[in-house]
Image 1 (cartoon, protein in one colour):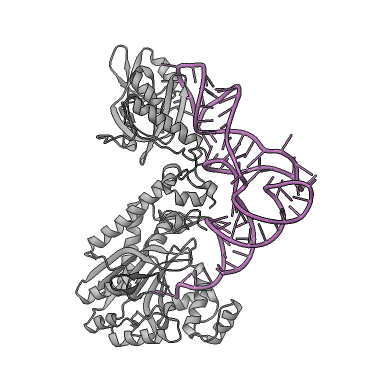
Image 2: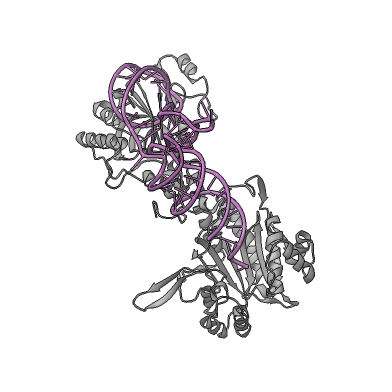
Length: 528
RNA sequence: GCCCCUAUAGCUCAAUUGGCAGAGCAUCUGACUCUUAAUCAGAGGGUUCAUGGUUCAAGUCCAUGUGGGGGCACCA
């Protein structure tokens, strides 16, 4: 970003907007009002106020008040005519108090119409000198778009039928020194939307709702797990070994101990230590950090849920996954058939279950056991074949050919054991791991295992994985402390990981992960 | 790390073949006591991301850099 787009901070002279706003700020102070406001009790949310529209009555000059004609969506086209037919009298509504940001202003002679917005909605204020008095009307003259104001008044309708607060008293709650974005189009530049998320939340359609839905989804997940007796914990984010996944970590350093540290790339190994310790149902919902590329589906820090249940297995986790997802959809008040881009996802449980083998044959067109065929297919797809374990190669083909086809939701089950070093093998077939991944729109959203609890096998698998791999590329950094924990006996268990950001993307129809992370990683503004 | 696209007023966007840098919103002044992205009349607002280059002349063409977007790679 160039310097010319940077904010007005710094030595540059204040722009024309700021100068005008500071002048008004000064006038507000002159009127004896605090331009930065103070506590404002007992206001109602604008959404709540709007829901009281039916309390507005018409009070004729003589006789009993009566309700307005039923208005399905707010205002009838002929409200003005209806009012004229009623003859003498006036509208009477409940007394309300609201506060919000000024998003539109219209002057009509000595009247002011102002739209204020809080996080539940917008409402129009009618400001006339007659109603608010000399001083408040003078105050209203100092209002700019973006200012925060409060109002006491009567819920009412204008002649056009618009639901309005007829202002009786105005309160100034906070000045904005900067002009808001263009009112027709809002902020368009994706960089500015992420960098100045506060503006995006206020002025871009659907952004507030999306992030409130994110919060509801996370609340729902905690509730679902809590109802089933799971205990939430907070593991360390500073690790000495970046274990539990295959990803490059962020490196850092502890000064007093003069010790290298890494930020965690997964939650897994500490949760399993807690299984050993007797926490039979345990989970963490927290941030992990992976020092990798950025894409519409990847942010360097993201939110992960990992759940472990003693004496369960991966099938237990499949059922739990369905519960977590469908409950989350209910929590945001959405139907089980959800739009995503041009497609629709049907979350009605049970989700489809297909084996890795079956899907491989269907979409790659060759048998996963036919190694020569896989090799030639891999070459066709420009996949590196030299010195790779057959199953690793097979999985590369799977990712290239199969995953994009998995519109889902579909549980892919029974992975080749060799690519799952933390997973128990199937008793009936030790070549296969008791693992599933949940795919939606070609995206991996969940990953679950029957957890490996044999310490000798675990140690051996760590060792095997290490061979021939640069240390930071391997998921299986030898973690002696973890193996020692397993040696004390970990119950057989099911484990589940869910990428919360991706789940939120799917449930809120968001095309990129940056749309569901409030502050995604950006380069510093104006960096060289 | 590689490839493609992109950067013009506070914001959203124009600018013909290389020929005087424009509009809407916002701001300021004025009119209007039921407006609805209010309207009407006027005014001010620019280092065209940066640095070089080509040219009589560069927002426009070229090179390099920076930010952003998209794709690839990376990501079990």
